[in-house]
Length: 328
Image (cartoon, rainbow, N blue to C red; front, side, top):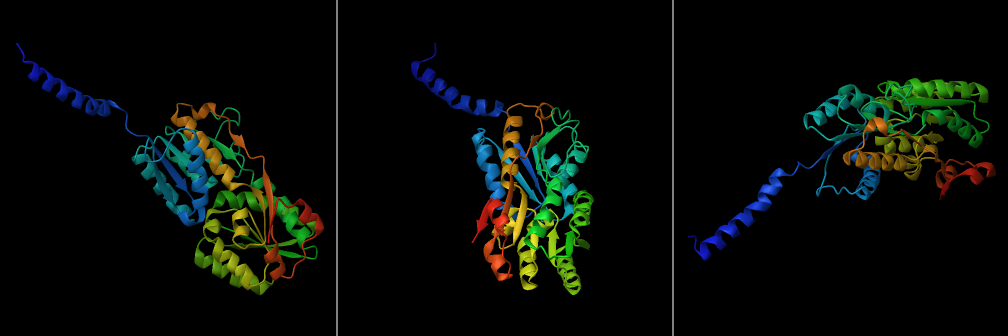
């Protein structure tokens, strides 16, 4: 017969083993892969917005979910390798804010769920079957940046009514954005009586070279395409525009907050929030095929009055009244 002391000792040992066995049977912590076209420095506030709303879905980084961050620093060429690395890590969901990351991710895997944030129509891009019923392994948000390019050029002309020539800076490595920007702005320019001069830059050095070339042509203003490289190098671009006293229009408010003149477009912060919401829902069991593509509904006109003053510009009352934010 087992003695009482031996029974208690055995019971205590079994109790100590149970939590270990339970932990061994628990599924591994899910991993979210973030494929980001910018740098951590340029997109830190966007990542914070993603984390905050992601936490609201019940997932806390380091506690019940892990996040693998890959930043391409504006280099389109690095994205495919980064997507392949996330696939090797067997991530549960891949977050791909940006049109190029989205296309790269979807080309790389048809099984891992993907949540994108794109500036063009994802149906036309071939990312989903329809907005209401994506149908594959991807869904996300459409921020309509390409659709507002013509309006953004019009706002720049409203600020500079005597402008005749506008330089347009695009990243030729980002073929998706380049192919959408020019068809948007060229007819708008004709309607406004503006002559466009197209300049290319795919690296920091090429940005310097493009500015050296365009300032020799002395355009009246600069229109920057929406691009991960330009977001990452926003300080360089803003400094060059200031040095050459060149009024410039940017795709996002972040550049205006950093000293740029004006921007018009949807909110990047809202886009990252929506990506976070959908990532959380997918981790809880939702299928990307069943989550309709969300559509941005808020577009912001932001003007930096201090920069306008330094450039000797007087902002028309009509623009002041329509601006969502005036930075002084």
